[in-house]
Length: 308
Image 1 (cartoon, rainbow, N blue to C red):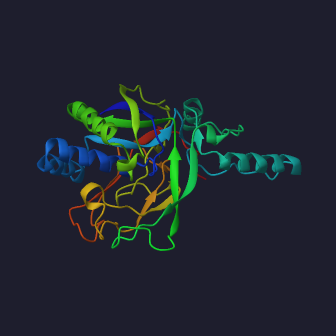
Image 2: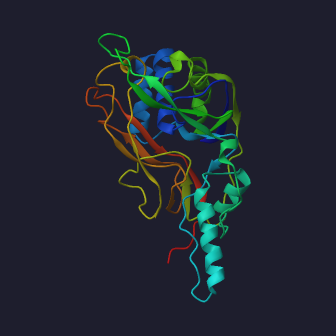
Image 3: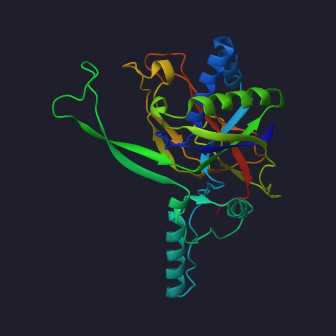
């Protein structure tokens, strides 16, 4: 499998975060509509058999990458109080940083003992806002007498970067599936103008720095570990409340079961590093037994701190 990078230039806000499982869901609908349901089923069988032809990262703003989840630096008891305070302030600054430049990311995965602590305005790369929307009554098709407002999250990045590893015989199809996403838009409410893409590029990518003494990996995608995956590491958990897409999205049974996932940036110890970790999650929908959830990690080898 070889590395590729998809760059999307957005022309609108989106109503869904750029998460790998959501991106993969869009690609699956593209497979169904462009190549037929049988081709989609064959694709999913490859994942179930442990031979995924395409691994997808989360989407990231610009050329930023997720900050690897690592334990904070520990203070040395021999240091004076001011030095310990300085380290505490440094760890506090580091904790606020969500994204790193590629140079910073590769410095960390190469085993740098210090995490970047520069002041950064994340709003330069990621903008979020909460707007108020009227709730529509499904029976009457109106907002009702007094109206019911609910908060609605919106996201905006000027450009979105998605990293891929693709099998040689699947590259042309991967390009076609991303073209489908560009044409139809991304995320919920794309039919009313959210998630619209102005233009995109699908380019070969040289990959990331490969540390000579890699003893683990950092994932570029949210994922669900399989029973064979390593368990020692540092991670950030999240609960995903997913929903069926396209023609199933308006059904009363469209909502999926809550799913515990580990966020992009999570790190685990393993050697040698595998091409992928995680799994495809079955039984995610109460009503549609055939529905699955993408839970694969796109790993980048890293030199993690030595375990005590």
